[in-house]
Image 1: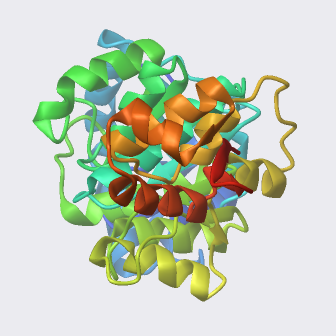
Image 2: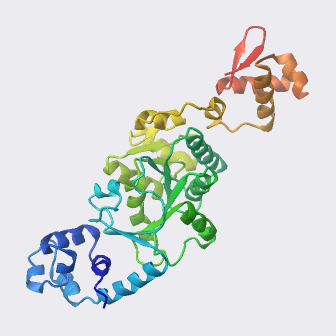
Image 3: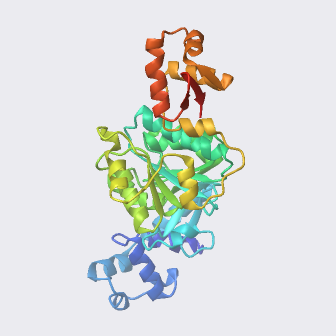
Length: 369
């Protein structure tokens, strides 16, 4: 067996029945990671939380052999192991009691970046939710916020966030609920490759661990713990996104939720987070900047900010383009430009006025806001 001390760091997390909190306790009482595997059963039984069953698992465990195989795997595929006592372990996670004992990282994302945001949401994302996610990340990039976007590579909001980050040249981290030997869902393998080139794949699980529902719940604490804040974009009354939000709150991290219609099943979770004061209302990028104390970049696109949460029809987009080009226009000239009758244009203008896109001036003249 190799004398590499990393084997012991890997092995501790492989002992059956030993979670990260108990493992850290074992290391503290034993004085070192290696010391755990040299302790006698009688001494192990004196450690709080270690009973007969766990003591037997530690004494009789063959995890050191398995850990050596894992070491070969991570060396072969250029995977970086971050142990919780190492300097390179993510600083934000060090403040979480139940943080993973070890993280396996493939890629080069800065896990200690000055600004890290997690974005989560339903797997059954609507067009509204996807648009919000894409535009929000587009704004983050446009306003020159040098940050890292964290999500879980799942269907819906997760993959939308990763793709939007890649598109806007922002680093992104995908936290996996399984080992790095596979990618789940398999259809996202092509995006995983891009993420490795422009961020990182991160997991606490060894390579042989396959995707399983309880593991995705466990990985949510990493998504919450890696970031300064968690944004929830669309969620039903139950779901992983709400679990992540609860965990983020327990870590005293900021949580934001995008509001939706009261009769929309995919907005119930977000609306409830806001209503119960478990999340800040997120309507625009300024909300994020204000709460987190970010200094906004000088270059801003007010048009994009106004349109972030508004889905305009093709007719509304055309009218807005015409008004912005001319600064101010009467309703008669608008009708001529779009070749529509007043009866059709009037309700459109009223809707644009309600949404804050235009301002009504005397003489039925409209001005872009």
